[in-house]
Image (cartoon, rainbow, N blue to C red; front, side, top):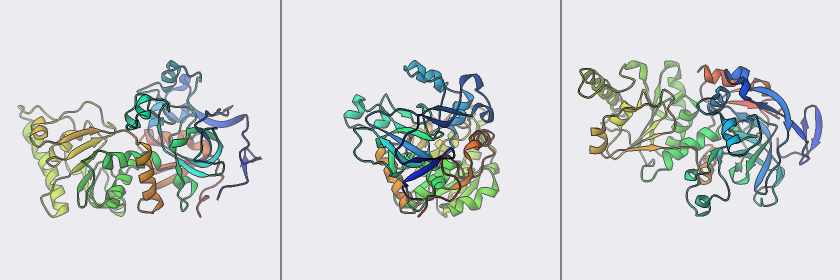
Length: 414
């Protein structure tokens, strides 16, 4: 489906660029924090107003990400209360941090997009007048940076979302709305982790260890590694995921259930340390066996955190980097610092991406070097259900999407 002259909305026809006073959106409210299936409810709310540098996007499809599982739970942050402290009046959270859609209205200072453009949205949001941003420094390190659709309102679970114009990138023409709507948050996060921290970026034949490789983030990390000339080794916890990882760029796969040394590292002076270090060394040898040579990962792509970081720190190569964007197994970490300082390893936190990094990974998608890894598409009214699946770790491999204004699957590609 190309840019259109008219769009069907709630059974009625509205012309391109005509903004209705109200819209349908999926919301969380504080009095229903809890299980995502119950927290997310469809309501009718006023269509948001846009500022001079903003764009109103008619959302065709949205991705599902774990940040809005947290929003539903009200944990670890009550995003509604957090925004109200900043002076924002809304008593609801209209989330969604991945989006494909059509530019519907532009602010009077927007010159690079026009009504009718087909776009995807990346989730790096910051105040345009932030002195850090105006100085030309990396905006992801600016004090005002937020996650669009999680720390900001009117995200992609709305029929009309409000975004800053710099967040928009061109929709890959060969992808459907749901394929386009599911990848940007994970893809841009993975790209920054792998290519954003000079000098520790992927170079030809570099070994990259990818934890959780069959998930939305990991499956994109595998492909980005391959596209940038590296060799990705996937870590999984289910043998059924092995072929999926090989099909998406891994040169080999390790099942972490073949090892039992996970969790916080024992005290180095305790009797338990011996079995632990033996397990970590066995894991490192599994990497060598895949490669056919004694080469350690130059980059370790981390997000489990507590249960895996001790091993990541041990097996990372001299001068290499462990880069982490989450702590899905816990936040309290342990490491053997002797291997860290003596071998001059880097432990780097990473978060979302800036405009240049989002554009770079979007270009890889456009060039068909990276696939969005869409596994399942749900309807607009299944947004709560999709989050519940993710909360219970019952979601499919790769990424999920929900249709918003798109009326059926497989539209939008040409």
